[in-house]
Length: 492
Length: 111
Image 1 (cartoon, rainbow over the protein chains, first blue to last red):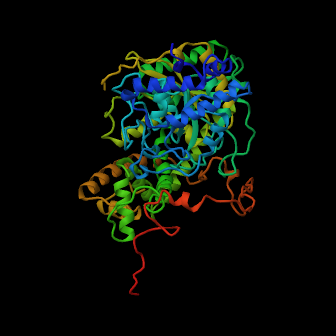
Image 2 (cartoon, rainbow over the protein chains, first blue to last red):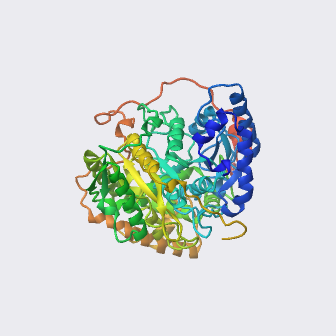
Image 3 (cartoon, rainbow over the protein chains, first blue to last red):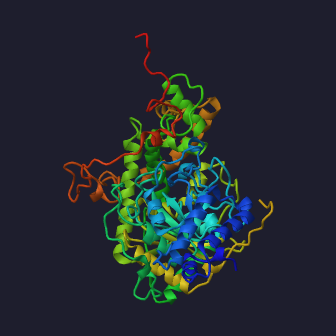
């Protein structure tokens, strides 16, 4: 077994025992990249020189017998929407093709304090708008489980590289499901913490009331370790919440006795792929067998979550993306004429079609005469969706659902129909509206060999319940050990 | 709720958003946005007159002068701190001159 397949916590033991060095581990990851990345295409930028320097620093610490943090020397990949000082950050957009941030996002500052090794920046749907990573201006990322299928999105690159063992773990961002859905489709663990848990400083904004950074990992222990590293309030993000951050490794308890798990009937609709329904139901039965109490709950406004999302997120995006005007950074049209025409030509040439579609949708929803009918209406329905969860969490500790209604779909299958693509997020957007912590955990494969994800949701700031249930499931099943066999050399 | 959008509506919104489209793109966006807005019209099935809007899930976090119950100040102390060097900030600018961002002329010299 290649060391690239190991978890961060297993590698930490090997680094500490000096069985391997961080430099060897880093070289092994780049060898794996040379082998499979031409087919997977998960990375937009590789940072090998600085990675080897970071590995060397970690090795010095281990050699000197210093007390090293759990992620020291661990190869990690970063979604290209998170600002990395001195390293190009494109957001998957042509408009930021040459943007090199002069500062690090707070999560990067925190990870560097741990001594991580940053392998590179990962592909994504442009400005995190999409469910398949096909909206990247640069390349299509292929799902390691079947190179003809999409990896999910928008953090498709970050999910694919962990699945393909071209990184040990990664960071993504989740606005309406952009961590959880690709984690499910690529068969890895992906978690969106509670809104406000992680600083958004340096996360390029899409929809500010929904965006949250979180990890992709190979198991739940690694998820807890990355959460420990990145959570906490930050003076640079006024929406980060000043609540105590627990040691999430204390939630790695292999026991669900006494915990109540709610299963919302609204998620098990005819639109749900029957094989996914079976796989998720079997996973819930495992948890019940281990002593959890399982009961049906109702989240009656679930069916309105997508319509609500496609007003609120584009409205916030239309305001956030107004900054791309060709003045301070990014692309500018070469022959603009006057200032207004410079804005229009720059934006029309620099943004891709989905981004323009959402800016149009959001601008319309906020425009005079329509704001109450669309934006305010959506905010009111958001209240109803949040109230559904508040009521459910009065009765249960954790809610279990499928993460995605289907397994990974074929590349190109949904690109012609934006609405059909939007419905990919039907299982993940409701929790986003309520700001809840949510995780996707591998829970099996469908007959065609593609992974299925079990989504576990908690009340705000109740990540510990979510991790405990996820950990118990993982420790009593083998699904997380299944690996894709990547068919290299030109397939897909 | 108006659930259709016209070609003229798309042109108007494009101007507000500082985007421009050719005839074909305008027609394409009109058709797609109409379809998406039609789906969003589903929200009208819900009676929401007495429902307060949610703009943010941790309302106590929002700094509003004279805000509703439970609001708290999250304003930072007013302390002078160093900012990024001008060269670092201008390094990404498409056009920069003498410490400023460059833009096409906005004031006519003859006036």
